[in-house]
Image (cartoon, rainbow, N blue to C red; front, side):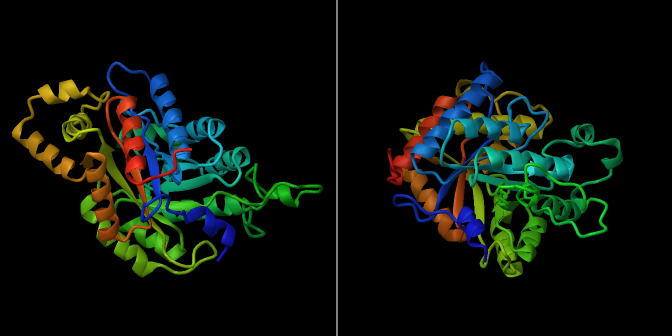
Length: 365
């Protein structure tokens, strides 16, 4: 096992947490707020997460969604790297089919140079948007590429990251810079290290692929809860030791929000649920206020969706949220929990992470 990469992947649980706790940020934009305010909130949450002992902080690629300002993870991560010192930063994830692998290798090589030893490259195979937007994101000669081409795209990206295309390959003389080639150039002192690659998924495809390749796996429990245990079982069953990991390492994304009392937590998560109703019915918009969500007249079908959605969000008082997270970690055997809080305002999200940190006795320095 490569000890450097293994240490980068495996975290240490802080306080009384049984597994490391991390943060997933969608850079949500609420009604009456701007993207500028949302990005400032992301900096505030990243600083809080670092100060309170959360292990890593990831941002997720989405497109054409007014309420989600995380369309460019690499740009946001560079901004966060400039405002933090220790916490791991990464993508949860970059949607690889939307990009040329060389571009991703260059972007994350640059991030690694900015924040050495702190960058994760999480990759997904979905577009992070609808089909029309996905087509607009891709070059004309790549419009037919999609999820089925993901293993080939991943292999190409890995070759660029490691700078090890074989002799005779069309890309053998092409190098992702910053990257390992700088260590082998005359007089080179650039570290050959590169960000560890994670595979993300919400079904079995990426779970199996991550296992076969011996890579760490992150599962989107927050929107595909019914598939969590089957996918994690498949990952563990498929796992083959690699230079990266000698044993499986599975992280799950969890929707969780803590507030000072149960009613306030319910108000906050209801606004996120209404936002999802609108997204799922083709009406994406800014995240509504809790007041609008409370006053909204849900149809029977919408109410059924909301009730199901809320059962998968761990919310309530800090002790209740801790209990729910601990139970989830035990039921799934997850090695790490990555918490995402979808609420209208940054204040509620900041308060939630602070309360969760308090519930677990995470450091206050």
